[in-house]
Image (cartoon, rainbow, N blue to C red; front, side, top):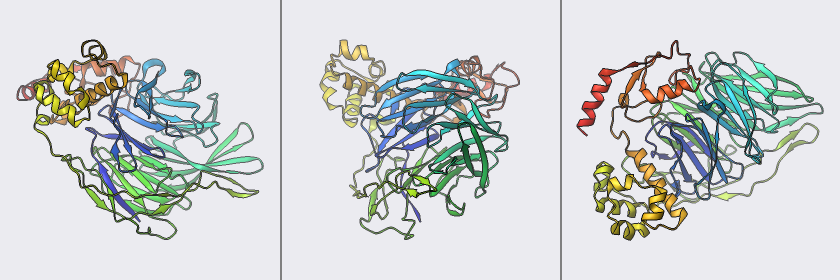
Length: 530
């Protein structure tokens, strides 16, 4: 049985990816931000949201211990964030400046892999923070990549439909042509693998535009020989499947689809266990918690649903506490969904050796006990104004709401109003406002950037927003794919030697763009009324 724990509605645009660490949930979006939640009560961490990317954030992944978070974006950057402070520790720019669509971390967190729209991948050494390998692996867009549990090879999937297996020197070990008709959208290895005397076998899940979820056996024989065999073709969804993931024990497989459903399968025999229908648009992301019986799904409806999976042995959970705190921010009010919880134990991602049977390491049981507080918050008056119209009093009220009360006196003395707030920099905070704490300066700036992202294009019709920047367009142009973009954004996209459409991933017949004067006029009229 699967039940909904809570719905997170903090993102202002489509949710592209979600990922769990042992104690945190990260979600990323077209609104350029990454939000970090504590899995105890799904409250956001003080430094959330993270704002460091210039365009939409496509993918996020935690290090094994959860100390760092890795994110990648259309801005060609892969950023490493500290989960202790929310600060950026490292930025990697993809060779050639192409938009990065996906990233993956090796099991020992020593290597970082990223795939881009121009068909190239980059392999980074995280110890030296240097580029280890860069290679063009396809003429299409790299949409999926992931490391095998052994850490000695990885796979890539692209919009042409091929899945390829590579070693760490980017030598191709195997290619499955047309694994998914019309393109691969996601792939994920099960944490467990089988060892025989002369070979190692891994299970790989892949999904694509052909509306299918497939499970493969990837076998490696000796040092180089490798092959893939199809184990299951799962057809529980009626439209393209955009995301897939194995549970930490390898027993479940989840997928999200354009048909707005989430399907959960028994990973061993491919039997469909659950079809979940609580999203209002395409389901673009799914992930399992490594330590709790929880699953998260993200969607183009801007929501993240967190689900609880009942004990698969008994079919139901032991009732210990009747409620769990949820979050529904449509009206910025916390709501609570009744669920049951108890004590759970998961298996370590073990190795199955044919000579000795399954090798397991125990994980200490953890009790999930979250009590509702009933606390809620109504929208304050200033939140209905543009930040540029805020008075000094509105700014002070905002400081208090964001937990920055220690700055109230400083902002009052310096008469900081809305326009001044938007112009704050590290330099002005340090030199003019005498804010000595580096951490406090960083926190203020992150809050301001989040505020800008939150209110940029507020209530704007979707057709007024550039698909790349998700901001109201100032100089809209029509590209060869028929979509309208901000001129600077699409020209930057094309100048990065990317000849595919940002919307369809299909090749652009021409890179010429034409002004969309009627749209510009409509945007001008709408802007004048705001």
